Image 1 (spheres, one colour):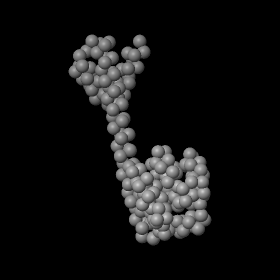
Image 2: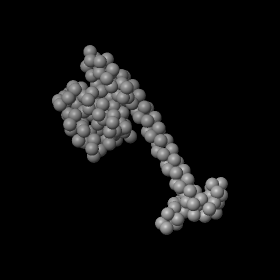
Image 3: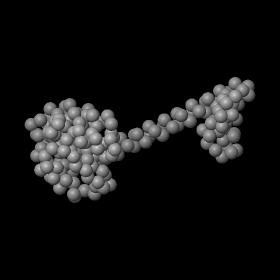
Image 4: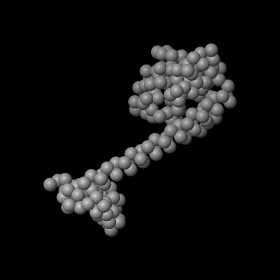
Length: 190
């Protein structure tokens, strides 16, 4: 179901996290040992959830988490020693990163995974809605440009140009966007 990236410098930490993950239904689990390797693998691959077991060999781990929020929509969980958890959480919580204090209980681990999964689904829903609205705005711009062309070349009024596009769209059973593109190709190539 989900693709996971586990970033852990210690083999013991990586094995522990992988053991916890065997209970879940994950499609692919990739383990790397440092922040640089994680950044490289994320150039070619995408993951749904990224688990970072701090500290890493080349950095603490919160820097990696913060940079990943800019380049990926994956849910991110940071495992941090309990005495540092509050301090690290203050730095990263505004970016949607979940901080889990170590040692990690099985229950807290799975609750964190559920929270990350739910928030990621919500984020993806918002991204899809945003893309849909962007397409709608682009359609409106095309139709408005086509209206301007009709007003300029056929001396129509704005309501007449609007009706012209709508009527052709209905008669030809095509979206207004396609009619607008045809109008623009016809008249703007002059």
